[in-house]
Image (tube, rainbow, N blue to C red):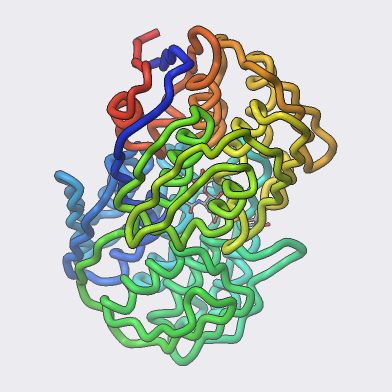
Length: 421
Ligand code: EPU
């Protein structure tokens, strides 16, 4: 297993390019199953999750080739409806093949995603949505089996529970509805940019969709979809991670090939923290502007502050004088990074879904354990500013979602290297 070693204390300076979005490309890859024809997707990041999805597409019978950021998927006529445990257990996003397989084949059998380090992640909304489209659902032997009773039929669906909206449930229902008979209305749809990107790809395939990016998406089913070409949007969470890297090291970075409007809530919080962020068309320059100030942050669905940047924001709060309160509303247990940051000298107290962070003058480098993708990113950020060496173990979590992280940080002046354990 690899580990990453960081010698802290260097200001980051320079320019960095952001890769394509992990959370946009994964459902787009699943959507390619909605036709037998070939689709071509570009700006595809080389990440573990993407490689897992390539394996899953192949195991379903599709041809899938990823070379130099360009992915070609040709599902052909003979798709299989089964997504096996051995692939699904390594990546929860595999669940987004459920909608496309159901729409194409009239049936799908997908291993139920199991436990997850960031807390319980049920799929009841996915199933509620597909059921409303006239599918019957069975859960047997760890698998969810969905089958169209006759043909999938459009329907009006309120896709919510006691919390906000669900990104992948919106994706699954939207994908299934593209080939259903008649009109589907999804109320309380997720508004994340990744959902918008998926809708754009589906439209290029011939789907009739309006309203993506708002809580009401309307889909008029069509008989057939065709292959399409699409460029994936930049990864807003990777871009946000680099904004925090500049802020925490007191650096000056131009983050390029990003979409600043996808990060308005984050940039607003950085401004409040005393960090200067200038937005340009496809880039942003971030510089520390004097003393850091504490800010309170609550994670919520888009366009509010994303849960996927909560841990990185906490890393900054640990070295910000004063008290910051960070409240996690999407995954109330997503605090696995807290004890690890504590090993580096951070003072963070958990109270229910809130973390009360008392800023300290210095963090000190230590061996720490990555528990999930974004927690790992927070530990790397903390390592960049800590005194001495930080060793982040279980780096495979980072490899799931950050492309060339060490290379990008090295080019900005960080001292960071990977070693085999
Ligand atoms: N929820 C339910 N029932 C459902 C679905 C969701 O109760 O059927 C709850 C979840 O437990 C959670 C909330 O709804 O409390 C939102 O979860 P959502 O379904 O939106 O999450 P997701 O679609 O499974 C995607 C991202 C996550 C990101 C979340 C929230 C992908 C592949 N994953 O997951 O990304 O945290 O949306 O924005 O798009 C990451 O990249 O590190 C990551 C975890």
